[in-house]
Image (tube, rainbow, N blue to C red; front, side, top):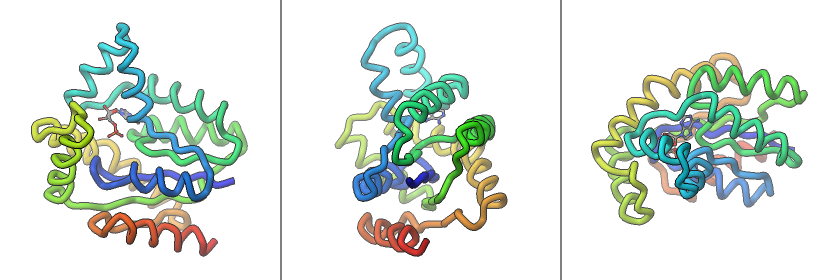
Length: 190
Ligand code: AMP
């Protein structure tokens, strides 16, 4: 049973790494961005609302995210989980802490993938042509990056200070396989 959180700005490669590690460890990969993008296909009122928020690069409400994640964790949490894109606000991290406490669970590893703005801007532009994501364009990238700086970085700092033994900084400018290697080395150690 392994429980992992990936942090990092949009375009840092946390989704890519979370997917690789999920397959290696056979642990479910929970990407809140992917879950929300699937929800957009419903084209109902909630989907329209979400589409507006996501395509502008802003964050969806904590209530919606907490409900999505807790429902999935209750149903899927057999072999652990890999959280990718959650928690993104301090309110979400408080909710997650309480939720895990109730389930008598705790996080085993936190990987914080660091990357500078110029590198991630180039990556996101490349990804936009490959995946045609509406939120991958220059105007929206800045909003998403600012959301990261204003909200999510506070969350990763909180974990870094309070859970130093399980918190690992990863250089996101390395190649995909080099990043995977570093993560696997850390997983192997304990
Ligand atoms: P991502 O694929 O993780 O970059 O997420 C794409 C978009 O989904 C974000 O820009 C947000 O609008 C929304 N989103 C994903 N996860 C969260 C979260 N934990 N809290 C709030 N909004 C989220």
